[in-house]
Amino acid sequence: RLDAILTLPPLDRAEPVFLPRLATYFTAHGREDLTNKLELSPEETDPKFRILLSPSLILADIVASRRHCEDRRLPLAIVYADIDDFKAFNSAKDETYVDRFVLPPILNAVESACYGHGRAYRHGGDEFLLLLPNAHQAIAVHIASQMARAVSSVRLDGLPSPRLSIGI
Image (cartoon, rainbow, N blue to C red; front, side, top):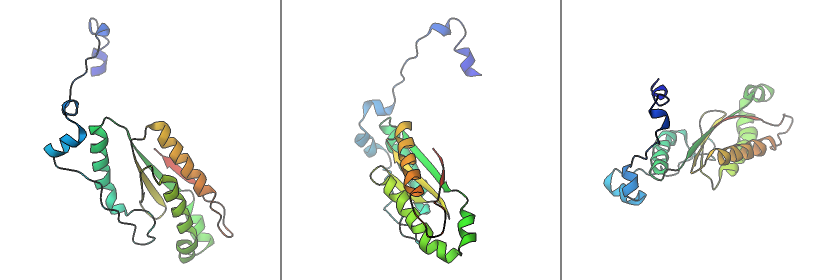
């Protein structure tokens, strides 16, 4: 509703004015001295597979990454991925087989696709989250596509290739 006010005369011809923020006057490192320092969590892998980072780190790392990116006026992308029809893998083979021979190569593919660009977390049984600081939409889509291709190229004995559903 308030946006409609901007279209009324004489505001329809008004030029927007940049409002300064604290970030305008201090460097990102200088601001860290003025506020509580937020750092990424020390890396702690998921206890079950020890490939992706633990889900317990996600919230604190999102808060820290948002702060760091906001201070620098940079984008932050969060990619959420889920293995399609994962129940079919558990139905075709038992859960022990899936935990030993299906999930590890998929988790390795997810970690490899994210390596050097951000952090990859295990979010649940077959869900993953990528935290990509300084990644605008095109970069996030590229990394997510790369991850989807890497996962779909995983060959599983007697099972179809896994596919991902991804949201950015």
